[in-house]
Amino acid sequence: MNGAGMNRLAIITGGSHGLGAALVAHYRAQGWTVRECSRSGQGEAHIHTDFADPDTTVATLDAHFADLATRSWDEVVLINNAATLTPLLPLAQQHDAQIAANLNVNVMSAVRVIAAFVRRFQHVAAVKTVAQISSGAALRGYGSWSLYCAGKAAIDHLIRAVAVEQTGAVHPVVCISIDPDVMDTQMQAEIRGTSEADFAEVARFIARKEDGKLRTPESVAAYVAGVIAGGPEGGARYDIEDEG
Image (cartoon, rainbow, N blue to C red; front, side, top):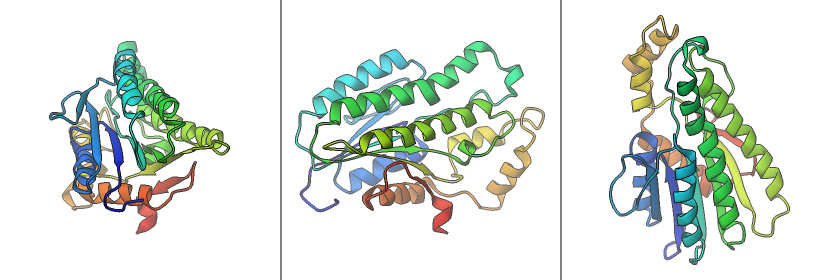
């Protein structure tokens, strides 16, 4: 549902840079009402959130969800894009505080934000989609990415389970995962800046940048929005590489 004159809401986490910022720009250009949730965003659409602090993040977003759910919408989308790769180290070299911070961002906040969204919007009679930005790391283990791999796999499977829960709902929320492949973002720069001692595959990622094989956030944002607009199947995982 993307016709002119419709009331459409897009809520994007991690929307201050990279893919998140490109998604914000894309939906704004299409005339959607946008809410951007991050630590460093700006403007009236920005909601300050630190996903490393799940309690504060969820309290903040739940209040916004409660207010937004009282309004009349034709379509509502939550794109859960916030994530962190840090620390990029073998698991045995990570401190407990680093492990907790990573899992708070990638798992705990992600789960609780999705849960809060579904609670508040479940009875809203609109087309509703939760799209989790996934990664190839959800399917394949990378050394020094153990927490990131675990987090992406966990939320992918959560999406599948919530999709099952939604099959009998009167006003269902369609829950999907989308793998955007490798983009030219701040996260990729972090990877390329890692030593070979900490990440054995770093040379391959450097070569991909040098060979111009990184997708732009803007092209991926268009793909993500296209998947959502195309009436996706609940519980499915969409991979941009499958589109050629």
